[in-house]
Image (tube, rainbow, N blue to C red):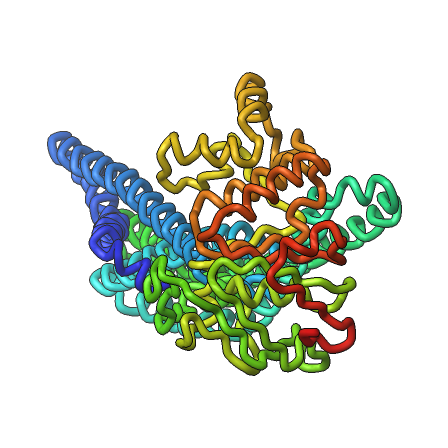
Length: 539
């Protein structure tokens, strides 16, 4: 994350410079206040006018620098926050599929929304504000030394004493913020489940799920209240310390005026400086623990952004291009956890143009093999070779297109879902429309406008979604396509037509995953590999 901040180093330096000028001018204005009030006792109208004009000028400059400082602060903080959002999305997009699945959507959503917003408001903004308060505090002490060393020393001693407060409370606040972050993630998860699983909940368990939602809301409310109470306690203690030192300095100045060792104007100036000092000190004592407490949000984001990208992967497409001859799966084993293997010592040979059926019951590992061949996961044991050369499994998705049974449709047009923002000619697009019988559907949905396919394809049938997925895969002209029950939701006549077109493509290697192959279709396949349910081995 430091790299992102460093990208805006010149803006950061400008923010700091303007902040310094404003903070120093805030303290210097006390001198102009003193001169104005002291000239009132001289009896010279011209002197009073000049002092008043100088006081107005310094306050006008302060207002200008304050405005500039606020604008630059917002530009810097918003710019860094948006850079972090972009970098986080990029980092997620470059992760291996298994890392993405292990973390879960709700954790990512919470990080991209809650954590970054907290980082923006409780870290970036507060660091700049804290810096300004420290500069104001130092400038006030320096000018107070010019007026009265005793008062300056009282303020410094008070500041050192007060500095112990954030040291005592920062750990407590950090723990409260971490608890709040966890509860926010839990709330985000139930929100996501409610929105994505509404149909299932509506049919089977909405009443019970409401109890779960209420529990998460209550937990979040309790965590936020606890966090707020802790911050209120720190703020109150800071205010008490500030008030005590304010009273002490006020009584001391009153005593000095009574003895005739201080003018009324000097008292006005010292009061303003004391107010600047105590105000900056009080705010600093409140801000510092809040900055420290933002550590959990900073840590999660920094871990995501600091994750090293695996540059050792050489895409299979770059190495072999369109010259795919064979894929050899050699004694591979795989499990989603250490306790159970889904695939154990499995081997198969795929030759260019092969039509292969992977057959087996639920849980036999058919889809897992498809995921391994498509680069979703790395094998725990064994290796996969392309044209006799070992490749990193995660690079296989550059030569293999995987069509799952459950298809995700993005909000947008059918064309956007098929092309996925890649550049293809109209001829190529229209060819896959014809091949997968989408032309009429495209015209129908385009006529319906923005509501055509609906959010996430809500206005599409299961068969229509699968045809779009098939077109999406075929358009990329990868040499291998894996259909995981890829035509199961399409009507029999259309499915037969689509499958015949795919089988006719001599350059296409086709792997079909199914529960069983009928005698009628058995002759289509060069190989039929049956998987056992307990340990997945070729038969």
